[in-house]
Length: 102
Length: 171
Image 1: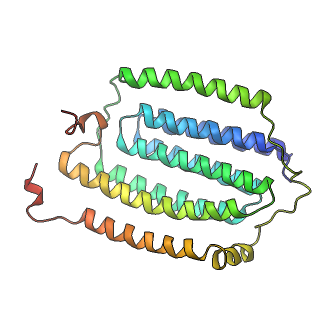
Image 2: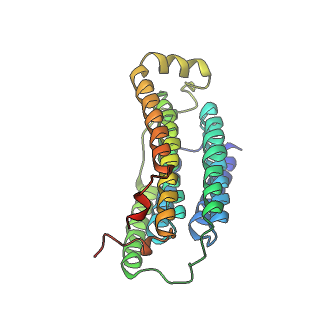
Image 3: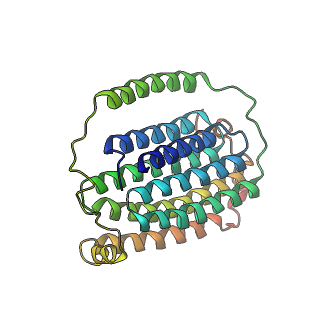
């Protein structure tokens, strides 16, 4: 039932990745930066699934399976770090977390 | 019909992704992330990856976004988005946007990825049996490594969220 071409999917995942990238670059709230990172990860999985489908293999799909697992672990650890940071410094804004800068 | 569905889901996903980035409120951003993930799951269904679409909804949209919402509400951060962007960030963003526009337009106009006709190639991996076979033969070692990684992540989260006596005094 696929009529959209591989080009369309790769283009879409590139744009989605770019949106996540701009989120990381421009936002200052650590939580939103983390959400944008997740967006980038999902964009890359979309490209993997598309390549896998259009080449008639399922290796990409299995990789996406692993990526989902790693992403879940990553989110758990990352949010734990953010909570620990908030306990220590009482902020999650990146421009107030500049102890190492000076 | 499938073409229209693709464009609908693509536009929906992109709009929600932009919503994640531009929303000032972190709760709204998390909600937009949820909708974007639903859009990506729809695209997965169009690519005949039904299991992955289901897992994306279950793991990401279910667990991860719920965790995000929980942490956002737990930390209850104040809205400080009124300040402008940093100069370096703005410069880098404009530069990156230019590069991105060039790349995307070049790819959209001239890029041709040659693939076999997807409608002729039978969709592999639509049923669970294929996944199970692959995971227990070719990818047996990665599965075990992933299991170990999950264990380490669990221990790490426990260590991180434990209050260590005396360590809080150090600033």
